[in-house]
Length: 92
Image 1 (spheres, one colour):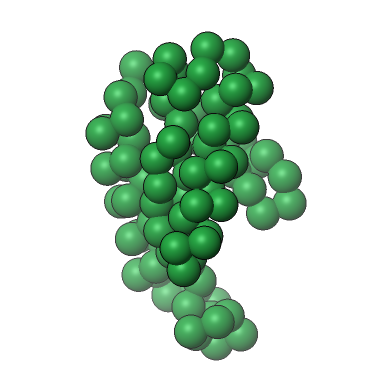
Image 2 (cartoon, rainbow, N blue to C red; image 1 turned 90 degrees about the vertical axis):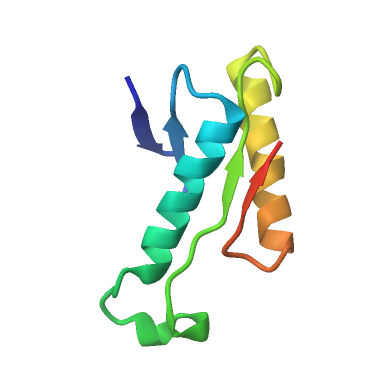
């Protein structure tokens, strides 16, 4: 069963059991594009006048066997996405 939870001030974690890296990337990209297209209230205050999201992906067991390893790997992927100019998805 998929789980979505808040993992910090502006960070969320989506746990997708039995989902490989390719499928996780496609899901993340769909979420990213849906957020980019959605007409949020007061968007004019955001950079480029729209709300966007950067996503980092880690998969078991490729990026770690322990939860802490997966979190570290997904966090590295997230910062890679942000460093690419934000509004991106990167895989660990």
